[in-house]
Length: 476
Image (cartoon, rainbow, N blue to C red; front, side, top):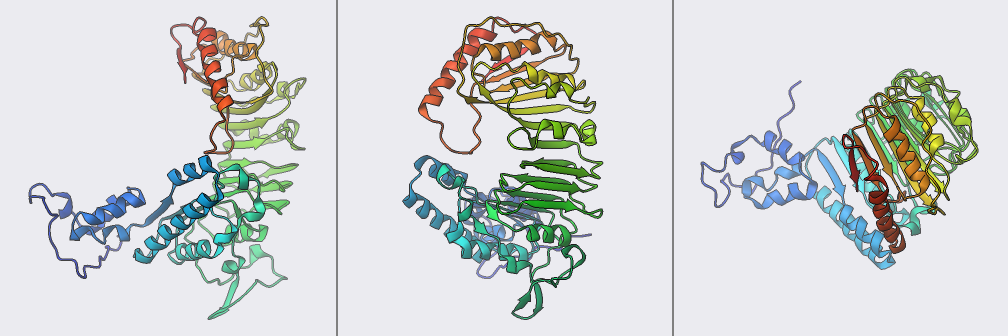
């Protein structure tokens, strides 16, 4: 299928070469408009817009790119550092004006990608809804609304989230008329005629956006090409089913959904699942699942329940958020994971608590190639107790070990010694003394920075004499 050529508005745009360029030097301006638009699509939105000053030939080219990524990372970091209400309002208005200005001049008929990324809450409802309608009207394929809070003051205030407009999903009965689907009809058997055509949507990401269970089910039922669904920070949904033999869904992420009690997933094409919940996770008909991220031990959903899944043996990547290692023997019962290549563990350390219990998961993964530990600091301290190294179990495939949150405890040294003594082909040992941060962009407090400096010195003093020359030791 041959793509339609891009039609550029040449009104008031004489066909000239760029000022200051000789004919032999300006080869790029000789390319067809279609090719130039593709090239501009590879740039950031602001970079692409700046090319309009090159010459009259380039004035309107950027307006036809099919990707609109309104990234404002610099402003978000500024908000995280300042934590001032006045600055939040000022930067929010600037962001809204920027997006509106681009959309008013943009001319693409269809969009491959539309991304909003800024700290915008319920007061911005009208502007955000307008942008959402703009993207849907252009049959967007990848849609992301990341309205994550820039600082702690709103991070846990779900009541301030932007509310996804349910009327966009309602059935259209004529011009200016909408109504919900019939109440006696299951949403999975009903195909409403809505204001927008959702059949082109391939990826949907909603973060810090209040969305209902019915809306999630609507997307699953009415987006036949939907391969990726990400939902962060929603409330008032206790039970959710992601089920359907015809689903093409490959990636599902449900995170920071604090009211979510039970999730049932039955999706034959699902390859990646990331979920935190409070009680029950039911996995059925997931033959392609090879990547799983799940939190265990922080609520009623425990490691014991995770062990019941037959799909554990088919995983290639496993990321666990664990709690309460001390006194627990459940990790010793972990079934063998013969296909596992990467294992990531997030854990909050208490005092001088030993980490050796985690090695049970490593021993259950005979073909593991990469191991990552992300250690959070919670009332921990250093002691001078003697480091024991009496666990012997050869790992013949583990090549890279990454220890994030190294503090310099005897327990940390003991854990690293395990890999030095047992990994036959270990190539890199990465030690990162930075504590794990779960709220992005929030500045690290000065006393934590001081602790990280001490931890880095401890790592050099404790580990450099012990690591053999054939292993690359990297201390960040």
